[in-house]
Amino acid sequence: MKLTKETKQQLFATYGGTATNTGSAEGQIALFTDRINHISGHLTTNKKDHSNTRALLKLVGQRKRMLKYLAKTNLNGYRALIEKLGIRR
Image (tube, rainbow, N blue to C red; front, side, top):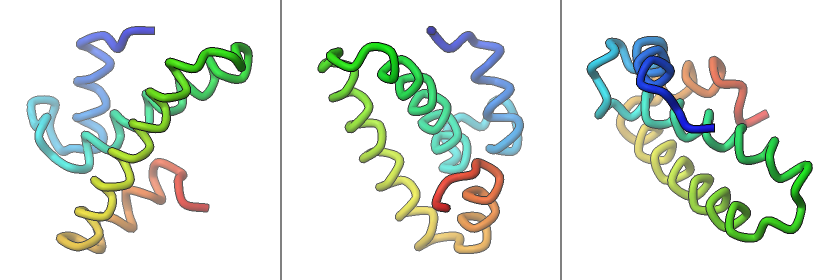
């Protein structure tokens, strides 16, 4: 599944403030989370797809670094975002 322009704009509007605010950490984390969820669903049926397994691990690492940055700069925004996305317990 390729993310469409409308889907990306909707993600950034929901989490990043506006649809054109593509540089916001919150919007990028939401985009990573959406891609991670999609690849995870793919890997449940295709267990031997090693290239997508590697892509998933890279995305998880990028999201982890972005979350660490957000926690350092805006702790309240970090807590609100992980609550909205349903990650970290």
